[in-house]
Image 1: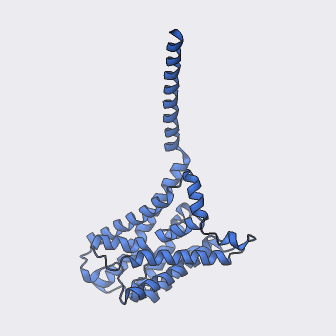
Image 2: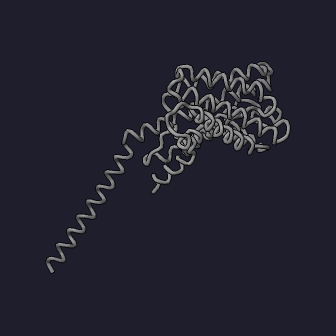
Image 3: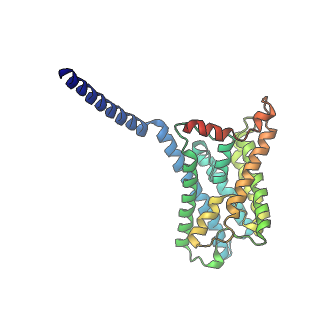
Length: 278
């Protein structure tokens, strides 16, 4: 009888110790440097994406309402704000500002994902989309935005034409990003200038045809605020396909001593994720 009582007491103590240890682990997780670093990255992505969309789309709104910016001015604004924000927060979050870029970095393992931070990719994407919505909402409140002053992206020609344009310019963008930001032979200090100039050139060429989105978040924010969803799928599918192809192309020509099958193994990200989940 006494032995059974002692056994029950031991089990109770063991359960209490387990609960205490679980609470300590949870507390350590919430207060760990890793969580703080991830939070800093998310905040940096929100701030960076907000100002990219606010100033880029703001130039479009001001030009449509007041006509004082001009189309070349809009191109310059887009290029400059991306360049400025890359130099501002690139060392913190990587300065993605673009769900398609985040997805591509993750696929080609240029975005560190571990068992502890497997959730970082969806958090980055959520941060970018939310920031775009906030920036678009700010512009909608500051200006008397009508349908004629819509600052989102709409295809001027056919959907196929717009889709092909978005794939091509997004390919170029990701190819340049991969070259200047992920290859240690490149001059890293010039990454912001190279990426900003690429966006400027893309807007010059594709702006009159598609709006030159290259970024699903840039198109989703204005579409939600203005409730204009015409051709929105183009600006989600096109940039994503283009950036993945651009990242893949640069990986093919990147100097490496690995065999070709290792370089072109695009499923490595999915396999690493499945291992982390298991």
